[in-house]
Length: 200
Image 1 (cartoon, rainbow, N blue to C red):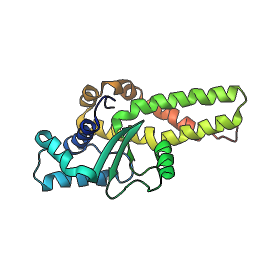
Image 2: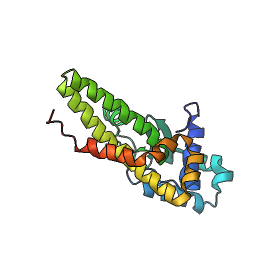
Image 3: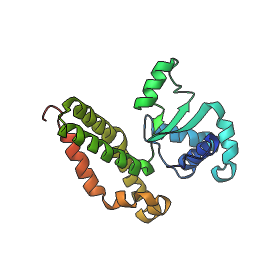
């Protein structure tokens, strides 16, 4: 994940470079279409991602607004603007059902950490007899696995197949543990997805 001290412009340029230069597909609503549209925009103007990234970011302007979010990236386009009322925006940003919320495969380590934290919350609630809180934690776990971790692992597998395990680890050293233990992580995911909140 990008360091949090990057400015919005620098972070935006980083994400555009990853999508158009490194051919990464954003995980989320119509992510491959978003990637293709950005690449078309750049190619249509005969720009070079490596040399002209600042110019590209400026040319996209308000048609593509990119902001770092907890657990992902907000990529807002003119085709999918935010809701007009503040209350809806706050709910969507807080709960991540927003069509502008995307992730990338290299965020799998953070998603796995969130998964482990939620497991502890679930276990603590269950051991203290707080079944409703445990049920909510289980739903959060399943949502995180469905929307974040599983798609990130799937995209990670595609990136390894495309670029090689060594290349992925060199670019994303924090993923080495995830890559080395992916089979066990997927087994863990399957077990949690089978858990039922009505069987405590």
